[in-house]
Image (cartoon, rainbow, N blue to C red):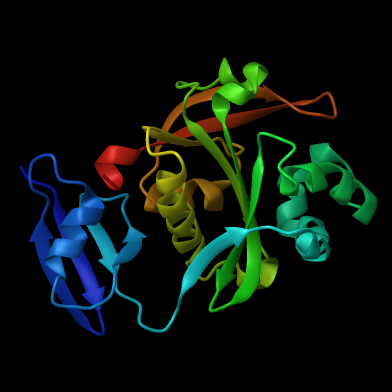
Length: 233
């Protein structure tokens, strides 16, 4: 049976099917071809792949600069982010600059991005090729995968924007790494909102594994993978 897509747009639902070998994103664009805007995912976790055309909200990612470090300190200090990043220690301005400055400057395999909604900075994304971190690569299913971590400011969370931020990052990353077949995230197994957001963006849960942390502890995380060709093409 063919997978189905639905594109929501200003109170109407446009229905279509995914043709054999067709990416979900392409099926959604074809389904709403008469609308001069690209559909973005609402929920890709179910049997019907739901997209939406949002004429009012523009979500994008841009390269982080050192001018964003103040915002990064604030985001990292917020309670809902700090809970999952506590192993890195207290996010003082000095620690944040020491940790993220080299990434911003291109001196690290990890790259930093700022998520924006209608031009306002709302959070950050960091990505890296899994194989660039050998200790981590042995834990994941694909050393060539592109790993991703993310966080939204507390005042912007809970609005359904996380899926949109991930999608914007995914589109940009596909252009940066055209040969990458997998995107990979590994949130803590207790982080239900993050796991739900990944599922809505098209990621599938895989193996649970114990990940060593910088403070000497170990967290149990859930490996979540996205098939780039299946979802994006």
